[in-house]
Length: 291
Ligand SMILES: [Zn+2]
Image 1 (tube, rainbow, N blue to C red):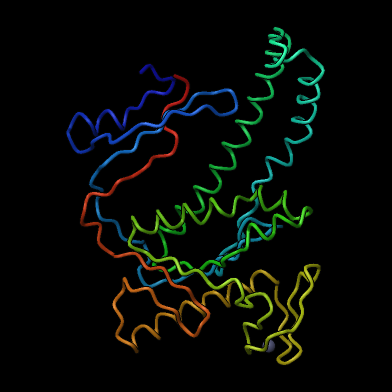
Image 2: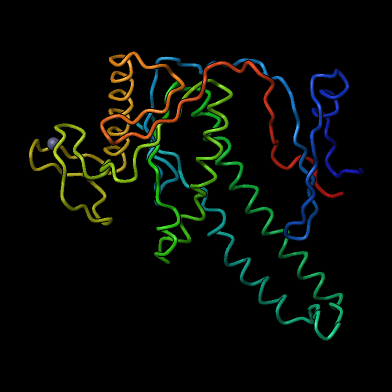
């Protein structure tokens, strides 16, 4: 196959015999052809940089993620920024004579040109978003032994149309998927806090739980202990506390790492076996574009 992007790494691994191609999937997306290879390859055993550290991640709408240490990770807003441009190009496409399967009408040259322009913007936006999420998940999985994330009800949020665009833009589902497979490589674990765990409504200082917290309340103000804190930072701190509680409960019970556990009814735990013993099948992200 002739590829637009030279698969240097893949060819090198194949040449030295450390990888084997299991299958190839070809797909057509936004006017471009992609091929993804499923490769069987033994990967070196990696460990997180800080094997004793835990971090809480609160995925947000205003920022991509608030983490329990360090500055918040800003949302990749490229899609929203580019939407005006996209809308303008889409209008241009719709004004030109496109293909019509029923009447057999072929697309005009002008339509094809406009459509290609629009596809380019679509690609650019998608690439930037994917890049931001990849960087964040790699950083989290390679640094911390335990990452606690909230199980967001993504489908439920989609029904709220005002939130939907922002949520889709931030790519929550993709975030979790990446974090989980990367954690497996590093032998770190991902704890998914129950959707109903009140991470936002709980005071990280005294543990008091509020009955109601409006989305507009950006600061958490505790009436019990007078704590005032950024809403997301407070939630992230609660998630870390949950991770600590989960691991101490584990020690008390003498549980093995790879057992599925449910701690205090609040944590649904997913722990990856720390060893990368067997060769792992790995599906690389689209490798090589444009056949
Ligand atoms: Zn409090």
